[in-house]
Image (tube, rainbow, N blue to C red):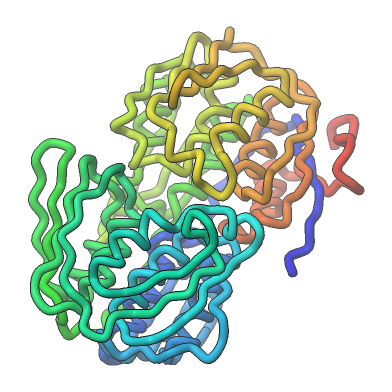
Length: 456
């Protein structure tokens, strides 16, 4: 069981340095899954070794793939081929990872196996019906708790049917689950999305040899996958996760005297909505060394302290930055003017009700924000946030990291009730931030009540 630990971010010195952040979580999950479905041995470098991804590695072992850690970030997967996964002998525990749970539902749906998925208290509260309903059309059967929640029993289809599915709302997880099920089906699986979502699954399908067609009309995209391909093992280089890079970069924008470079960040255009928004807010954000690695665009991103202004962020940008809204809201708390973040309904079904948790985070730090429908509105005068509160994280790693970043730039320290869940996506976060500051600006707290006083 993961140990909980309270912590606090304290205001102080500027941040400086060049760092790497953990590998992209979305790509890490998919690299392990596609390695398990491929013929041959896939070499993966830069894999995120956070708890979420380690759960996926364990699940692939349980489904019959040989998964070996060769060195830090370097993993080797000997796959079983499309349709070759075996029935697991025990329950698959996905911990806190909604991505792993939903994508593995797609994997299992196309294989004639029985499996049970579970997770921690947070994941057991998250809805799975959004994937189980479309996957049922291929012949798979799902039995779960009310609302389709975990624990979830899955009976995969012996002869899966190809799917033709129109996403009701943009969701890379649902799209990916349908495509994974379609790998085992005869014929063409077709997915239509109303707005383009992150396309790591499509990129990786091509990388491993699948035949895939994508047609785009404005924001709308149609993906067609030819079923039952023979995927071939292919090396995967995992870029640094832009969602993880967001925290040190936003901190550098908010703390006077800061200049921080994050090396090798994934710059897939369907993942860089935060960077576009920060630039609109006046952020000094520079990309250098742009290049392509493993089929994904990457580059080094440098952020320097900036005076930010409020902006109106369109809802169409949400799919490209859905995980970054809490830390963007923190940035907006230091901007001059009104920031309106539109179309955030999806945040209500993340690790926590992330929309409500973000509003509560700001309120705990003396910043008023309002929710109008699915929009979050933050009106500020450019002054430093008061800080001084304790933030309840609801077992959500991004809320915890966002609150700690806020504490670095606020007038007074900001405490969080639990930092333990940060390791699900960003192992070493606290040590890295303290290294950038040259001292313990983020420190453990005995208990979850009061933040420490004073600057370290």
